[in-house]
Image (cartoon, rainbow, N blue to C red; front, side, top):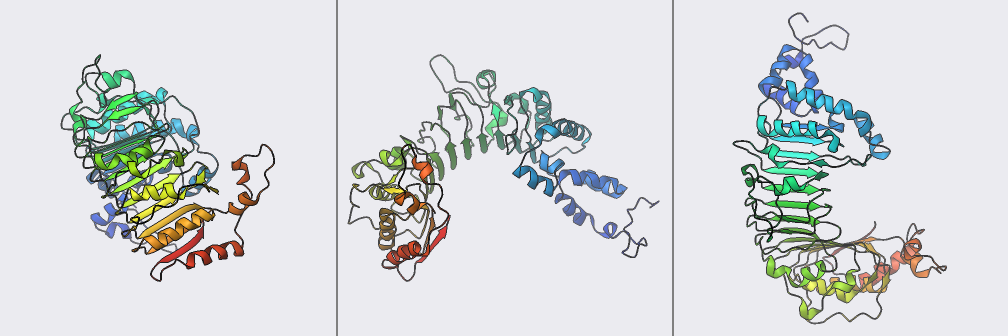
Length: 478
């Protein structure tokens, strides 16, 4: 041990040669890259060689989080089930990150992550970390997720100042912000990341050069102004706005954008004419959203390939008539998630499918324990979905109209290869339940654990009459 080498004991108890020191540097660097940050730092105490390894090739990513710094795998399982102990570790976390960044000798980092519950009162620490990441490390990706999975404490959101990222020769191309607040000073100042949409009382503000190169911007659970413009971000390829508050609308003029996610409650208005190359869209389909999808989407986004629409509204009421829909021939993958308990209308579902004649993959998640018996008949003639290959239906109650819809797909989709149905195990409980006064539909859905063999056999028998030899049909529990 006197020569500075870490001696590995033999199984017999006698000291033997240090097998790690016999390994080449590239192998040891690979080992370091697979360790958590806390464990990788600890290797420096092993020997002078390990300290040189750390200094000669520092990691390309720094992640500061509860799991990467403090929790073991066993602790993490416990915390995910019961309680996320951010409060217990907060002072240790702040001190450890400050000390590490102060002593760290590296000068280039591609990815810088901070994932921890931190609010407005810890702004001085977060501000310093952002400055170091931008000015010292020249990061390409910055990720600030200032809330924990359990949301164990309710803090005032940290106020983000985009000027902290301003530096000469910035390489920043990915910015991920979670639980951040944007104040008026940040939004409307002479140098801002996001500015209010132009109005008669406010001139257009310029955006600092460090944001011009952004290709990915993700904003989750953030507090945003009512109106935003992303026009200055000319290189933006992906934009995500997820469950952000205050915002009511935004302006897009980003010709390079290919991926857009806009999931907010309540849904916000969108004009997609400024993103003509959009390929992937995920959005709320509320009162106006579903009508937009069926009648305006094809014209505004002519290149769209993948669409995912979510709704907590009574979707049946907002599907336009067949005469108002406009076909979107480029969409090949469609996901529709309708979570509100409502009645199933087979004609409305078929109308939605008619918007996408070249569809190859369809996923439906429904919550319809009853049928609309007086609904319109399925339009006949030109509804053949000849390109449809895979269908997945969740929330299947096995009602008469739902079975009829599945049979319709088996008959009309000539290229169908796979049909998977996830059955909801409350169907007959609801249909046969003699509800007492005041009992809600949601309460009526509780209590049933499984279908009996007779119910499943009846549905499979009805489907078998329309099933084709080359189609794989599965009925599984959700």
